[in-house]
Every structure is written in structure tokens, then in C-alpha cells.
Image (cartoon, rainbow, N blue to C red; front, side, top):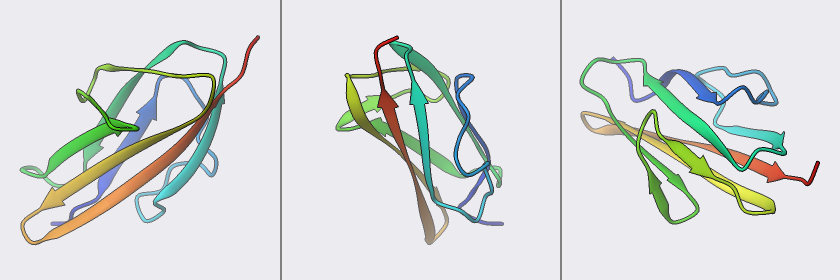
Length: 94
């Protein structure tokens, strides 16, 4: 059992690089105002906390993007271990 993610979806955005549970830093670009964030932990009983900047986002809820760069963090905790994933989402105008 581990404090990692099995999957991380930021709406239909393409994460760069492609999601891998052992990689913790990603980038994505969007023109959307919001995207649904879904983080699935690898271990049952692990906790997941998602933030867009300092704003908490419910797992399965929507993150609202500001123009420019946004920092999405996903903290996973299981027992005495923890892991943080970071996605830098850049919102551009269409």
C-alpha cells in the first residue's frame, strides 16, 4: 500500500508527460473556465486533498482557472507516507 495516485484526470486536458503514478510534476493548457478534477488513490483508505492555488477543490469537483498559470496540487496520504502531485495549468484565451 502506498500514498500515490492510480489516476489523475483534469477534465479532458492532456497532462504532459502522460500520467504515471511515480511522476509528480505535470503541465496542461486549457481555454476552459473550469475542469472537473478526479484523483483516484492507489490504496484504499488513502486520503486525497486537492487545491487550486489556496482554494480547496472537492475530489470530483470543478477547479476554476484564472488567466495565465494556475497551480493545482494533489496531496495523497496513507499511513505515515505522503506524496504531492503538481499540475501547472495554463489558461489561454481562445
